[in-house]
Length: 287
Image (cartoon, rainbow, N blue to C red; front, side, top):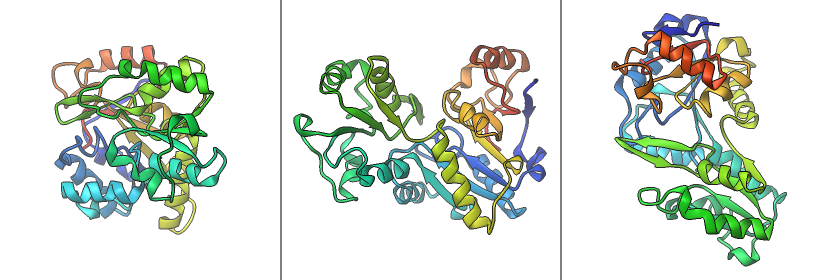
């Protein structure tokens, strides 16, 4: 199936009642919202559509909203936020993985534990690992976690990965994410519980939230998934049975020709064949 290249969301918006839209690389760049993406979401909502922002941010939806507020992202550009962090927090408080979690990630996300009455436990006493990211994603790489991974494996601990993303772009800087470490742990034979895209539970939660705000179930054929992550957003949307837009101007911006806004069909098709994926649509940037 040939992937149809769009110039704007408006070309197909009348075919859908809701969109599940990725944040980093689609809606904002980690620092500022993309004006064209904001306008596209606002236009979709003005036509009666619902917009759910679906993010692999390793923090609850309220924290994601606070970040969007600091960016001055307009509230009328979305209806709800669903985050991998919220799904992970639900697992933390369920008791299924114990109550003593050793935290690995930046200090700013330690509230993932403290917000639900838990505390950071020394590794020797831990029931499991909560992994939200690198301790310092500006200076570290996954290579710096070889000793940690060996220690977790020796202790036989399960890792709860609150962000399956491998990399993300913050402005002009490319940063490693929790998923890169979790994947190395899994490759080493460790057990990882993944929360967020491309895994099914976070899409199930999106459907639940959408039904709440729409006043009833919305059929999958009327929902569009949008994202730039070829390992997360795109396979996640496809596996969830949703028509999917691959935003080529995000993480893969340099792969499809010199104009980020206008991907070329031939390299796009070759790339998708290599990835074994068939999104229905592609667009340079959401607009």
